Image (cartoon, rainbow, N blue to C red; front, side, top):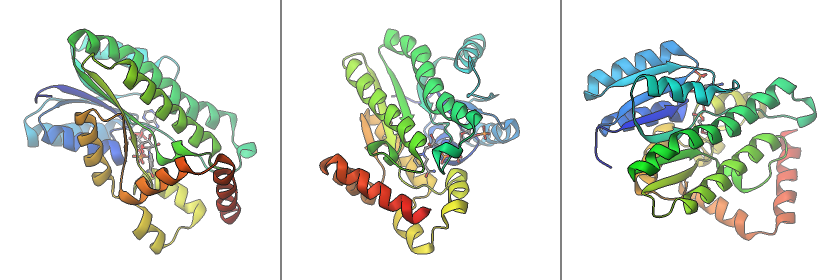
Length: 264
Ligand SMILES: NC(=O)c1ccc[n+]([C@@H]2O[C@H](COP(=O)([O-])OP(=O)(O)OC[C@H]3O[C@@H](n4cnc5c(N)ncnc54)[C@H](OP(=O)(O)O)[C@@H]3O)[C@@H](O)[C@H]2O)c1
């Protein structure tokens, strides 16, 4: 894909999305940066456009709201921007016993992690197919490969993202449009910080399991540009997801239950 294409990145105000924006800009892509925190988007857009001579458009929006994907699609069309690369990165995780989750948390997670991602893909895909080229990347997780007690809803949402992305990737073969499911493991972002307060993970865990978001973003960008259907980041995570897929389901459920018991 040649430079000066436009990439739309959701969840660009922090974490993996923020790092992806920097990589896309460094590779000459114009950007549409979407999240709720407007100031963060505006300053990122300003920095990247002056550093890399690209155009960066910040759009502040709550993507968990009903109709958000359509509102965003309309706004992009109004600004006459043509999206050649779509990164559905915005996501939210809640951990703890499912029976204690608030209905509003359930609704936000399902809307952001699943509904918005599916609607965004449906809206931005047809122009890509018509043009005979395009790149879509959806943020799944290694959580997509097995059920996760105490994070059941989040893991299920990422299983959706993985299955949906792989199905669509095959459906689009020969169109010039590719779909990549990026599957990071633990990544050092605000999302992990919030989770860690509850689990109290130690230094040894961090050294072995936690990747910096810039590495995850770099691997994701490369996989997306190659058109890989699935990319698991990091060797430890690759090993883990390979084992998960080989082991019988009852064993994986058992391991998940053990891990959950340790976390309380
Ligand atoms: N961190 C990990 O360990 C990890 C592992 C595997 C997969 N992932 C996945 O990677 C993706 C990025 O995660 P991250 O770790 O970078 O998370 P993060 O640091 O918490 O950033 C999340 C991004 O999503 C945006 N966002 C959250 N709610 C939103 C909403 N309602 N509307 C619009 N934007 C919203 C946030 O911006 P605002 O707050 O400004 O809206 C922020 O830019 C997620 O899909 C996550 O599930 C993360």
